[in-house]
Amino acid sequence: MKNIFIITVLIIISGCAAADGAMQEKSNQDIQGSHGAQDAREESSESVENSSVTEESVDNTMQSAQIRAPEIIGLTNWINSEPILSLEELRGEVVLIDFWTYGCINCIRTLSHVQALYEKYGNDGFVILGLHAPEFAYERKIENVRKEVLRHGLTYPIAQDNDFATWRNYNNRYWPAHYLIDKKGNIRHTHFGEGAYQEMSEWVSKLLQE
Image (tube, rainbow, N blue to C red):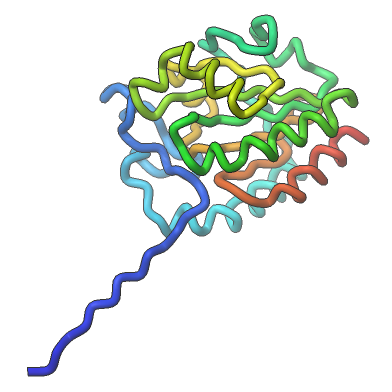
């Protein structure tokens, strides 16, 4: 009998697809994927791998259509900032919304780049909102989030989205996920997972000049 060798191919994806973690069971039913999938836990590696293609088509759509950024809601325990209750407060500024959680290694790898963006453009009308949406129960504790913010030297506004209110408002399903909003309040660029740091910087610069 011929030996049959099974080769397992490991596919390393750049983003953390939303998983069970600390989400309540009812929350899992509410979270819908930005690309129309049904449940975050059913995410396939193929769809994540092809996210750059999807983002390109989304960006093209955003150029021709005015896609209003959903409102931020249900945020608590602000760090580095007084509470920001609405995106209307930031109208006239370019805003980057970063969904992250400190237990996700992909998120951790992006934090220095997000901080670098803030340091580069923060005095030019650029605001970052780091929205911490916990994957696991221990990530819900504000004292743990504060420790991680200090450990990574993050100085931009950060808030907890423990109930996934804003997460659901954006139909988000990734850690990390970045939504770049122009001065008029429209989403102009998105990126899911790690990488494309120079591209994001160029987008921020472009929107600041508009």
